[in-house]
Length: 114
Length: 112
Image (cartoon, rainbow over all chains, first blue to last red; front, side, top):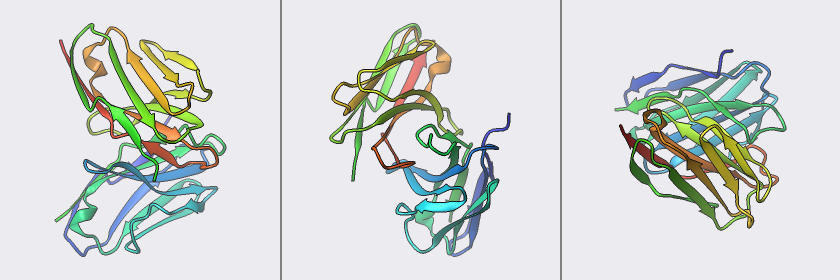
């Protein structure tokens, strides 16, 4: 079975550019999570969707970050404009609704903003 | 906000040795989870614990949900080279739905 799919796997961009990260959750899962991982702060939840609706976006760092889930099989995380401090690994995870504690993670997107 | 204190930060052991790591919190959690992350990959769920005192095994891995609901440990018996990676604990507070709090991880190195 296909797990969570993320693209791109690696992204190098220049400061000020727009970055769009993509995620396809596991089929049948209706909860989706975006995380950011850095050495300093570890794994942090950015935003959480349930049935395509954002439930908790308190972890989104600032207005430069936005996330959408237009349908059950696709989500995007956009950073505009990007800054060097946004460099991190961004993970998408999904779970069944009601079992949000058991999340399945994608392979991550490694973002480097120069 | 809530924090999980995970220890040790890193471990260097010989193949065949047993390993123990733990997480503590000042907050009470309803669920404890243990994940493993291999280099260049996302975390993979190893064990989920749902009740205080619960002891659960997954092969050579054993994890327990502390009685106080503020701690959990993970043991790995007879370590092998493929156990290398970073192990994360995560806790869920009741009513927080998907909001998991992650520890900073324990980096395990196994010498053949």
